[in-house]
Image 1 (cartoon, rainbow, N blue to C red):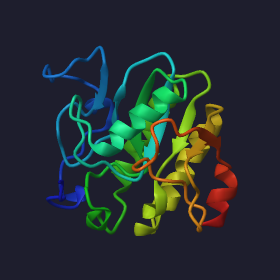
Image 2 (image 1 turned 90 degrees about the vertical axis):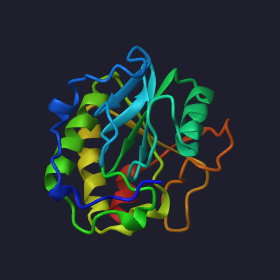
Image 3 (image 1 turned 30 degrees about the vertical axis):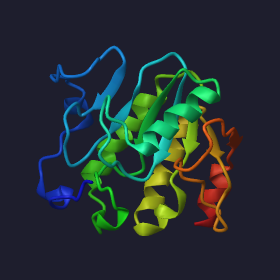
Length: 200
């Protein structure tokens, strides 16, 4: 369980470039992509390395770390492999860690968002035609700034010719299903991200 100790505006937030400088030797860097590479109040990226990654987008990180995946990320990895990907990258609309989304900060930290988008551009660049799995569920309604964060991601995705997917049943409000409680062989379906964001 992670409860934020404070709003991220009140702590030192590493830029994505600085956070990419890895010094932690406690996990296998040939297998894992973990930025920053230590447990903190925020996380830009957590995933496995491969030639064909599936980028899964949640709302915000919880406690997961290399070799210590939570149930959500275990589900993400299973579904990625079942759909023909050799690796997964867990990314989030907002980078602040909070196991309970109700604990997320009320105001967007623009610096954290900007650096998170730099991280997103980095992982988009790992594939010639990135596959993005929208997987944030109804939690996107928790804070008014979250749809705007998604809009930033959509623009970056277009620059990299990304394809958006969902998995599982779309909610009555049109939100893509959260990865938890999906069958391990759940197929990915094309997701009209432009129509979706226009409806928010």
